[in-house]
Amino acid sequence: MENTERILNNKRVALHTLGCRLNSSETGSIAQGFKDRGYDIVEFGEQADVVFINTCTVTDAADSTCRNLIRKAHGSSPEGKIVVAGCYAQMEPERIAGMQGVDLVLGNSEKYKVFEYLDEEKENAIHIDKSWQFYGAATTTADSHTRAFLKIQDGCNYVCSFCIIPFARGRSRAISVQDAVIEAKKLVSQGFKEIVLTGVNIGEYEQASGEKLHDLVAQVLAVDGLERFRLSSVEPNTITDELIEVLKSSPKVLDHFHIPLQSGDDGILKDMRRKYTTSDYKRIIGKLVAAFPNAGFGADIIAGFPGETKEQFENTFNLLKELPITHFHVFPYSKRKNTTAAKMENLIHSGVKKDRVKTLMMFGDAKLNLFSEDQIGKRTKVLFERRNKAGNFEGYSSNFVRVSVVTDLELANQEREVLITGMDNGRLVGELLQ
Image (tube, rainbow, N blue to C red; front, side):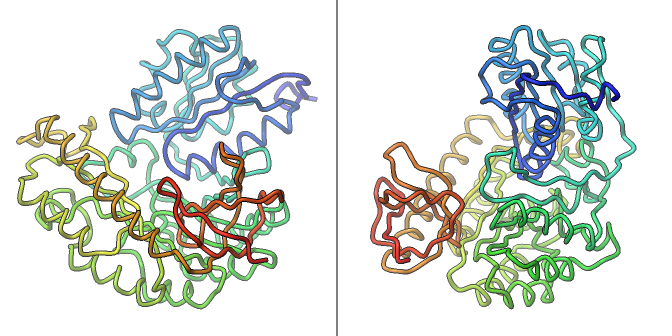
């Protein structure tokens, strides 16, 4: 048997994922590869023969976190091989390779070839390929997730002025509908009850594959045994009436949607090169609310984009106040090399950016609390994950609010109907009804 396929008994691997659900799906597939080769998967921070870090580079803070994780990995596994892969590795390979303890730096394509490269004796080896082949990925039983993330698309053809991801991930490409259904069936057969379709920009699915996104969704929804279904982040300008109709037609579809906003000011949206206006955004949210009246909505928001005035920030705040956005994902603008926004003037002072981020995050917390309180007295289905520190079982409702129940039952990966009875420390509590 070749070295790349040999069974390595008693070896230990620790994996850590930063960033998006797409990264999570990819790490899940790679974790399964390690498991298939005889590795024991241990918690990150434990001593391991191999430490695999799947990185993110969406902000300066993400880059800094990656470097800190590399230092932690070297501290916990000084004799182990440290592999740094993904978006940050793609963009700054030499810097990462120069860090103490790093053995392998793998780009977004090469990370799937990690088992080949582990047998090399070179130190600080860098493998970066920009041919941008599509590699499918999904959560596996080797991962710890209850929900399964199924990758259907990668890369992005948009040129948003602030975004580095097209440089890190390449142009848009996608899986076929047929292959997506095959992967969904595998996930269900492994015991996953919920599937989340993910990608960099899944709204570009048709352009990348030649097939319709709503057709893919309809066929995945038809998979026997699948109980819950969600889409990950979807650009507002790519949400079609046909897609909404398919989602509305199935009881498996959960009423939670992540629709990136970035700014609530049309001038800033134009400078960001976004493909919608605030009116477009409101129209799409309105259509989804009409189809899913109890839905929760997540939105990405960038505070302190170059030139953002106080009035433009207030426009964002007021739009978020007007719309039923319940889950705020707020980021300070981060200058990314090679992007158009990096050349813009009128940069916002870091203190102002911090204040704006804090304002939005506090407002988001308040809106989520109000939304959660509105669930009290209602029934909802919860997919339970694990016990919390208090010993109660927790999981997420259909509209993505965390719910806990007091029970002696083992409910991991079970969907149960719950009556929401109140809140405790900002989280919903309920009683099992079945």
